[in-house]
Length: 83
Image (cartoon, rainbow, N blue to C red; front, side, top):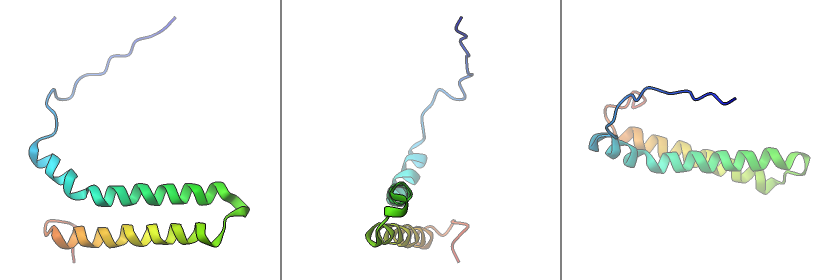
């Protein structure tokens, strides 16, 4: 027997233009975080066979995430992380 679970619709509207602009502004950071996740997964899956190049890929991805995070914080004066 299958059970159908209905979820209430929170809003029938999609994201606002302001929301879409914020996502677009943050997209380079999101992409860099996905690249970092991919590098970390590859490194973990390599296990003891992980090479120096695998570790370097993780470090480069980490640096890229930090760099883009700083740039985003510098551009957005409303950011809580901006110094």
